[in-house]
Image (cartoon, rainbow, N blue to C red; front, side, top):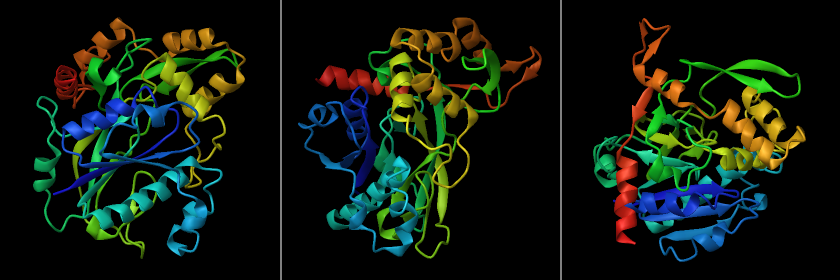
Length: 328
């Protein structure tokens, strides 16, 4: 069995190399990395990794003749997720040529985790998937943002949020000078997927896949994708700087969540200095020790027990990086 990874990146040099080394350790044979208008030295940081194929985002002209990809080719200039879907499709074709069985599509701030305690083993994991299953959906867990600065968040943080609609935060809107109530979960909840290459699926969006005729694939929900979203002040600034030219709607036409639009505008249009933005992150998005203790108790209003517990301890990733560091 051969397993590949596809990632589209923009200015992810802090995460990219460690992401690829982690997935190589747990069973990925090949990684396809597409750089999308990046301005950092991400390419140079991974140039020595012989299991990685480096490309720029696919030119729209390459697939403009395929009617079933029109949703992406027609919106590729405006939506980075359209370019990401084209890159994933391109990687699928490369996988067919190389005899790869499964292709996992994620972002640089995401890691696949199939075991919370012991090191994940992707070969064993995919061996448990029935032969007629075409797609594996990984559930999202989001990192608990506890530090203003991480050196390597993958190796340092082991606490993850499980459920979006559990706790709410009061976040300052600098434009209205008022606080607004938002869920404690900042990123997506839709999960990511592994595609059985032989199933000939195409992207529906960056989270979902379908057959060319529009029918749904046979799928299972198993394993997790750990999302290290806006994990510290620097990543918060980088992420929403990258988001600066994003429209107010997604590729689907649905409105972008209010919190993402607020944070996009805070980073790009509030006039705050970098120092002030770091302070904004610390005061509004970073969780205090008191809050973390409350979350870990798994109760709301002191007497309502939350099930499942809102925080999941994931020890396997940290231990995998200890192994990686010892081998370097």
